[in-house]
Image 1 (cartoon, rainbow, N blue to C red):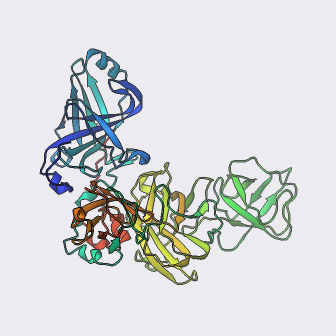
Image 2 (tube, rainbow, N blue to C red):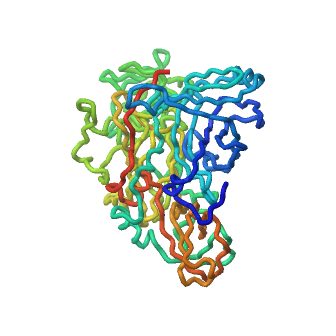
Length: 556
């Protein structure tokens, strides 16, 4: 890229320079192109091609977001599809010219239907660009395409709610009014936790600044610190997962039915878990063991040892047998199978005229009485720095968890609200919930909230992990060397923080010279300008971006 006489680092400055467009087309299968065999077409409008970074938003896979990438030149032109004014940005055509006859014939055999397209603009004159030095113009899917020996044209729609796809995926948060110089966020800047003086340590380079004082980031580059809990397998989860009390039932032993019956109704569904108690267990079964429903009518069911397993033969009826249903209430949880926790919605509030009317006892997001919840007992005081939460990939966006409220307690009775976090409506993705200001507590509770959905009866999390370490506390921030620092070439110099971990920060663009041990600087914590970042900083009342957009359904 062209080099400027002075550094150009911000999106605002970039808007005043020359622009080029990047187009990423995510194919269903790899194809052979003039640029090799690829599964994603990385195209640009710069003659000769250019180098930039892959998108930092879905549908780009998490593992490759922001990676350095060569973009190949293909003459591209986009134009909006004429429609009503409020939907003018929702559909467009994308035309690529100079298609050879052989290339056009090959493209005819490719299925582009429903392939994702991301269109971004970049400045061609930024010195040392980063993955964030771009603007996401459009994210959508291909509806149709047509090609001839001269060109290929794609018709693309931006799906806000196309069937089970919900967009945008946090790509509207650039409208947050975050600015260190304004009245909304200055109060955060001058908090000691967000603005600190540091001293450079040994072995620093032009892009890596080491400092023993950077204690906020204990996790290494490729890790998240010490994993304290896995919610699906760890035994430290202490929240009750049982109904209160037991229910009497009758046993229909072999050779009759090999089944249980409860004439008043049992409320069980296929593969639901339950345990038995009483005076004498039925033959072939035992008290205190978890069993599973094979099939149920309103009054009777068969018994399995494992979900989906074979039916257990019951050889005698036992005496005074009662059962306890496991994990059915909304404020409790149960492992509905080996993959995820399932939360029912029965205790989230009363459904009234199209919305959930929250019970008075649950009002307020900082209320520890929120239901449902997961509760963890780590056995000793843990100053957790990071939760990693993954939503299931098979649930509809409307039934996915949207808000995670985090509490801690020394006695599991008096709870302190720590933070909350908004989860985008995208399944199968890990989200890092950072709580670096959390105090040392023994018990932790995660309360779950979701969007209203009249057809939803449960919502689920696939993975919940907690770590004592942390990383990237200073990411999106800035380091500024003191005017009187020892290295003259660095005096007053400022750089963006791209990453931070293990007592070091990675800056861009590179420094003119490597800092020496003893150089002094100030480091400011930045902001990703998302609602989740505001949650972490307890500054949500000042968030100025868009959580959601008005939805339009595109019928495919």
